[in-house]
Image: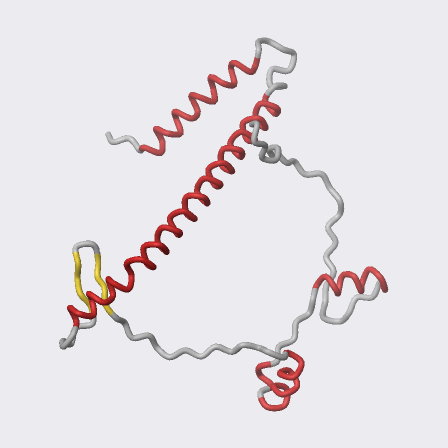
Amino acid sequence: MDTNPIDEAMADVFAELELSAKHESGGESEHPDEWVPNWYLQKLTHYAAEREKIKIQFDRRMAEIARREHALSVRWGSRAMAEVDRLLAGGKKRSVDFEFGRAGHRRVAKSVRIDIEDMDTLIIAAAESCPDAIKTTVGKKELKDYMEKTGEELPGMRVVVTPAHDTFYIGSQKFDEGV
């Protein structure tokens, strides 16, 4: 029967954690699991620190790759395009296949983008000529502030109050280079 590599990896992790947990327990106690929360949080903190270190490495590596791609494009991109254009000259083909991919020209459809230069002037003009372009929003924060200040609930709104209560949480410490 084939074994799932994910199941095998999880079994390895569980075995490692069990060894670590046995080491931390330190023997018999009236409360045999009193060490578990601190140990558990220590492990979560360690994994969060590892995740952060990997993210920093990943970001640096991705930036380096982007720099190299840009340098490649600046140095060789126009020459590659010129050669592709030479190979396509006089024919109806729009691309050429190469060992590591395809290069050519694609038709890009016309596009229109609206940049707003003066919002107030545009709102006045649109309200008259194109009222469907005018949208209205209601800010919940502003409504909450108004209701707390005046005690008034406006028609069309419903206030939902959740009473204070305790909830269990578990979270690791903030990332620390020394962890």
